[in-house]
Image 1 (cartoon, one colour):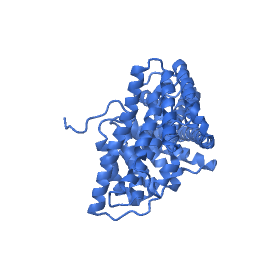
Image 2: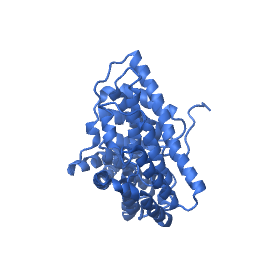
Image 3: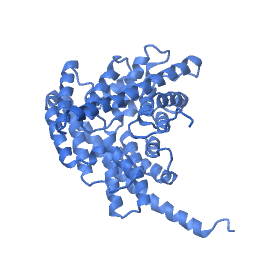
Image 4: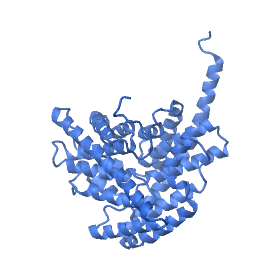
Length: 410
């Protein structure tokens, strides 16, 4: 038997060159798509915050958006779930109309005051464009699945500037209990490429302003505090998800005509904005996320953001859940700093990754995200917070319908 058989290494070389080229292409497409989303969101936020009267147009925008998806949106309305479904149960290529519909609808949601994030449109646009390329180049069905996994990871990596967390995200949320190791190489490589593209356009990610004042040495008080905080983050993640599902269920039950759902949702968001007399809970809320690391915030911020986001996404507006989750997690952590004997900036950071762990059911991604954002010194605390949040969020999550019951051995 040959120690280095030429046939085996010829396959390895072909595999390597194939996925080097494919990963570079996926990373570039995802990076450019996310950069476009990023720039448009920033411009939309600037316009909205300087023209507060735009909130009064949100119900009409909701009606128009609802009608657009009513006529053209099925099955595009499933969003990220459509990409995951195509990985596990392929049926057809992603419809070409998904790209413009996702782009237009999420920008309108942001411009007129809906509470939603930019990561879902980045991931969906990345996935749709990548799938168009897979169709164009007649990629093998098995490789097409890897293309989609890599596009999800690279979309996350480029929008947040976290290549390692992005790669883990693509692998973890599509695993469904079985990690696809054939996707590891292209997913990591495409995520690294995609994360660099925004830098070419001089984009500064908000996480560069996330600073934890001090990370304490391990001790009984600090560990118990982080465990308790992790439980709170898990319960908050469950409340966040349940709120979106509850609003969606109520609207679908009582409002049969689809375009009227986002119209009513927009009306309620407009009234709530007038009631609270500020726009802190509209849009992304990045300013509040950053402030949570530096100064105490109102203790009710996380609840208000949950309500605004549930009405936005549950009624049919388009956008992501992760940035609003970061808002909820950081402000809840900030509030917990009033009663727990650790700094509120540490709890804000752990809240950001902890609530994401509970909601996404991606604890490994969340731990890696914490290390990328805050450094390796937070690793143990991040593991504690993320794992407890993962457990106490229960069997509900953002991306899966069916999940294993980890409470029972059988």
